[in-house]
Amino acid sequence: MSKHSALNRFGRSGNPVFQDHFSSPSQTQGRTDVASPSLQTDIASPTQSVTAQSQYMTLDGTVNKTGMLLVLCAIGAFLGWTNPSPVIIISSAIIGFVLALITTFKPQNAQYTATLYAAVEGVFLGGITFFAESQFPGIGIQAVGLTFGILASLLFFYKSGIIKPTENFRLMIFSATAGIALLYLINFIMSFFGTGIGFIHSNGLFGIGFSVFVVGIAALNLVLDFDFIEEGSEIGLPKFMEWYGAFALMVTLIWLYIEILRLLMKLRSR
Image 1 (cartoon, rainbow, N blue to C red):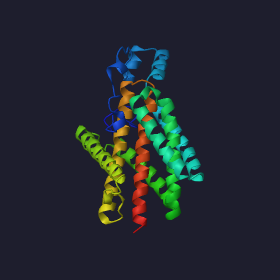
Image 2 (cartoon, rainbow, N blue to C red; image 1 turned 45 degrees about the horizontal axis):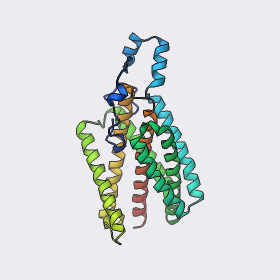
Image 3 (cartoon, rainbow, N blue to C red; image 1 turned 180 degrees about the vertical axis):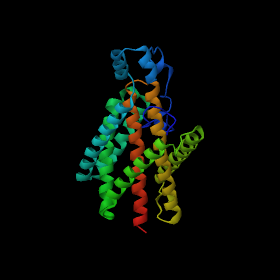
Image 4 (cartoon, helix red, strand yellow; image 1 turned 90 degrees about the vertical axis):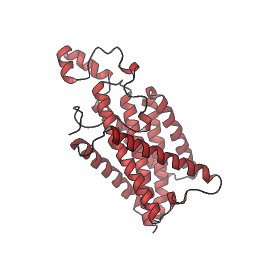
């Protein structure tokens, strides 16, 4: 089982959007209750315990909010699929990026920005999936199935303790994620000069190998997300962190889906 006691469902992360928002003094200062359920039973009445639970981050609350964001993303994906305009796709990608930055630096507003982010990114995913599907029929359902299959598998591995988010594990995944982001940024800048890093888009063995590596790193970020959400619920982070945790999990899932779609397109084009 995982190293946390809170139902072993979700949890501290190497996901960049979680940085500087975990257990800051302002979030826990002045607490008179205790996150430990056993200690809450000893020092608080049932009414006080219910009140405390309504004020602080919980696993059930984060799970419910993640479900809400997934529904909004699915609705947005349907709209993007039925209106696959390049202008809409590009606009939704830009708006989604801006909303992600706002949510990262202002997690207190995550209830509003995360819901908008999920819907807008859904439009983007629906649009790019439509164009991928037009080239390779059936690729969309394959990408969706693999994404949620990986999510379920990683959650099982995390709960069973097969994969443990140690400090070295976090450092490795965070470093790899930052390196991939830097590589994509360099490729984006080079595209303005009519060039780029070839293997990122190549369907050769090296290009496919790179995509497999990126999919693996994206998937392992889910373990770090589970760990953050679980530990956040144990120490009693503010209630808005439920939305923030759900948002960060959505960021990872969207990234994972895009990379899986890219990998499948490479394989199908050979």
